[in-house]
Amino acid sequence: MTILSAQSLWQAIHDRLVGDSKLMAEISGVFDPAPEGQKLPYLTIGEGIARDWSAKDFTGQEHLIDIHIWSGNRGGGQVRSLADQVITLLTTQSVILVGHQLVELNFIFFENFFDGDGQVRHGILRFRARTIQNI
Image (cartoon, rainbow, N blue to C red; front, side, top):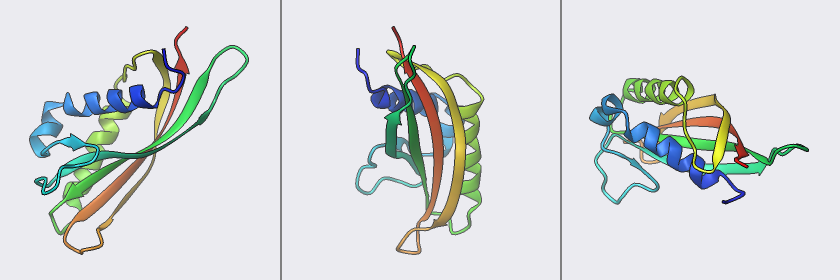
């Protein structure tokens, strides 16, 4: 059993997203990182921060995890729609971890902008998760 739940959390989020047929019909995949030349739109599960969230009676972590939305549409509508779907999938249904228990998963913020080249629309979603280790 691992103490750090980051990999289990990442895998559970990935599985929840790729397991949704409606979302997968609209994107070309969920990656970390995306393959070179990947067809838009797609999602990447990116950066994360984990810190101790333990107490006397449990071992736990608090995680901040970012999900990136990449779109070739000039307008922000596609990114907003995909962001809404991801938020709904992750915050309204249970996400099952291996070796750990998800206590809560909350949406923190959403940002939508053009990437550096001015051609690709980029959305960032940030979530806070709190996990405890199964005994």
